[in-house]
Image 1 (tube, helix red, strand yellow):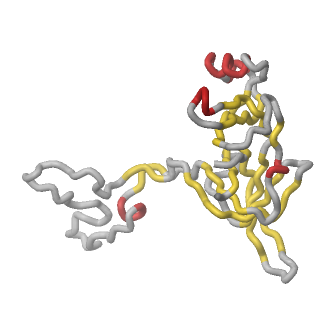
Image 2 (cartoon, helix red, strand yellow):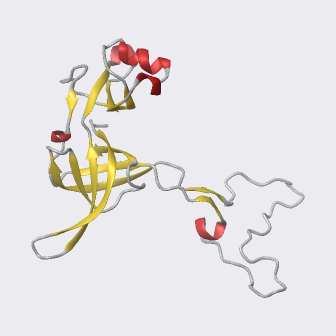
Image 3 (cartoon, one colour):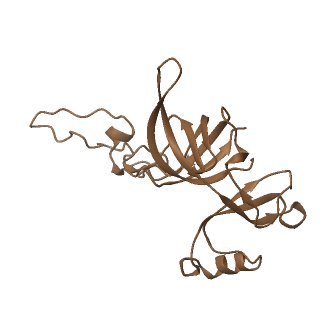
Length: 206
């Protein structure tokens, strides 16, 4: 993994290229982040740095988080994220900004999608519906699970209704088409998961 940045999704808009084509883009306010910890292979088994994002009061943190930051004389951060890296040219408290990215660079973005709640098989697994006549008792229900008396149980992995949209999702190889270093704005071609204000993780594509 390479060094990335944490940010918040601002929203979507559109830009026009030189030929007049419409390009859908997502605006992300990324960083600045600050290095809160450096991990070495001799101590932790791997090399990594931890970044803190968005300053916050101690009352919003747990005691382990408070002492973790206080031992390096750092203020409280709402979000902490670890990145495995190889080159150690960083120091505790150092600011990491958008200048680690370049225009036309490919990045992977991870975010939490919009939750859709409990979802049935027709929507989530594309099952077909049953007959819609009045005598039918199977319109959108799953129907028999096919277990029978033997073995008398439902096999693991059976496609069934479940919660949808409650897992982190990563979109790979998105292109950076704009950077605003003064406002810490990252302009990404295309869309990313989640609603406005969602926390996102941006890392270079490998």
